[in-house]
Image (cartoon, rainbow, N blue to C red):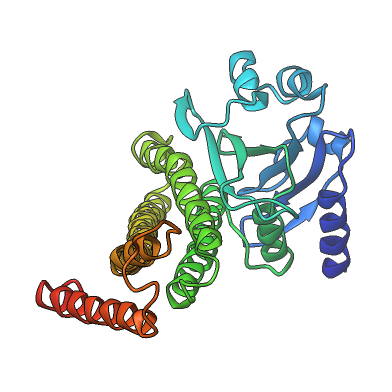
Length: 340
C-alpha cells in the first residue's frame, strides 16, 4: 500500500497541473506519516502529540498567494516572498517561523548543471510548507523514506533532510565535471583544438554559475543555524553545521575544477600557438632558402642579349652547381646560427 501511495505521489509530482497542492503528509513523529488531501490541509490540526503537517506546493499557480494568506495563515509579506521569482538563497526568522529560499541542481530533462532550481519553505514548527516551480527529486526522496518509516520525525529534521539532499546532489555535478576535465586532459590536442577549447569554456561557465548560485546558499544555511526558532533543536543545528561544511567543501571543489579547466585551457592555447609558430618558422626557413635561389634562376632566365652562358653547352650545369653551392652554404650558416 505504501509503495502504491509513493508511486501515485511521484506521478502527481511529475505531472504539472493547476492544483496548488502536490502532496501533503502528516509526520507521525516516529519516522512515518500518512497522506491527506487538500480539504484536510485547509483545517488541519494535530490529532496526536508530535504530529507535523508537510505540504508541498506549486508556487506558480495563480491562487497560491491567496491560499497561503487566507487559508494557511502565512503573513502576506511572507507569502509574496514565497511565490516570488526572486530565488536568491536566503533565510530569515519571522517570529516563531522560519522562512528560507534554497537552491538545488536541476536534474530535469534537457537541464544544464548551472540551471539551478529553487525551493521555498515556511515552517512554524507544526506546519512545514515547501514550494517549487519545477519538479524536484528531493521531496520525493523524503516521501519514500516516510513511506518506509525512516523519514523525519519533526519539522526540524524534515528541514535538515531537505537541506542535506539539496547539498549532496551537488556532488554528482562535481563528479561529472571532473570526469569531463580528466577526459579532456587525455584527449588528442591536435584533433579539433577549437572543439576542446569550447568544451573547457563550457565547464568554466558551469563552475562560475554553480559558485554564483551556491555561495549565497552557504550564507542562508549559516543564518538558519544562527537564528532558527526554538523548535529547531540542537541536534538539528548540528546536522545543519555538517551540511554547511559539506557545502563549503563542494564550493572549494568548484574552485579547484575551475582552476583545472583554466590550466588546461591555457595549455591548449599555448600548444596550439606553439604549433602555429613552428609552422610559421619552417615556412620562413624555406622561404629564406629559396629566396636567393629564386633570384639567381630568375636572373638567369631573362631573355636579353649578353646573358653569359647562353651559347655555352655547360651553362645550365654551371648555374645548377652554383645554386647547389649556395644551398649548401645557406644550410651551414643556418645550422651555425642555430636556425635549424
